Amino acid sequence: MLNLFYHENYTSAISPHARFPRDRYRLVYEDVQSRLKEDPKLPISIQHALPATRKQLLMVHKESYVDAFLHGKMTDAEIRRIGFRPWTPEFVERTLTIAGGSIQALHCAMEGHRVAGNLAGGTHHAYADHGEGFCVFNDLALCARIAQREYGIRKIAIIDCDVHQGNGTATIFAGDPDVLTFSIHGEKNYPFRKEKSDFDIALPNGCDDDTYYAELKRSLPLALYPFEPELILFQAGCDPLHEDTLGKLSLSREGLDRRNQLVFQHVAYWNCPVVVFMGGGYADPIQASVVCHGDVFEEAASLQSSVSSGY
Ligand SMILES: [Zn+2]
Image (spheres, rainbow, N blue to C red):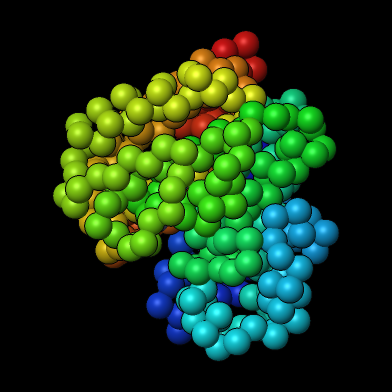
């Protein structure tokens, strides 16, 4: 069974006046539910996400930053950089729950399920000491550190396919030979000052399905084969989609699906656990992103089925 973690505060704790498409989380949850209704044999179970603890956050983040966020002591500039306003206790709870949902998914993947995911998260723009780009705490980094400390996993590959570079993740693991950071993203897009991942694949505006697929197919083995991952964290952002308002690339829904399949083929090859993080998706209307996120989780469920039968 593919366990996916979700909480209604993923949507409800964001102000309805925010520019951010807050309904996306609820709609993706409903999309997965309707797929389950259509195909009751789909091996997906949606679980209740629980908040991460301060102690867990400190495995990655600076104490002064964590406490400023938790206690509402951040400056206006710091809050603006993150992009969610206003700061509210409900928003703090949501932030903890999203990080917690990812950590629960990690535990699930490590404790026999092999594949699990969060219907949110992939907050790759968060650095150790600050947040930006709608990301407060870096759940990918938290999962990597917890996998190392609690499960004795050494080699972890973070495959970030969100259209925006995983700048926070790249910085947190810079110079760390045990965590591979791989980011395939739009060259002329946020963040405009890129950090250095172990592998950065920068794509031109308007990049189509075939170019994207060829680049991913060429570069993933170059990154993974010498590294030999024991755990893969997949940031499955759907903002490379043509209809995305913040994406600037031109992938179709089918193109994103081929991307997902390719990543999961690599997971199957390495026969290792994988955690799937939702990542960005900002199409207008939002439904175009929602179905693509649903596709990611349905594809993860079919990987899960092949895992149970021994890959
Ligand atoms: Zn993004």
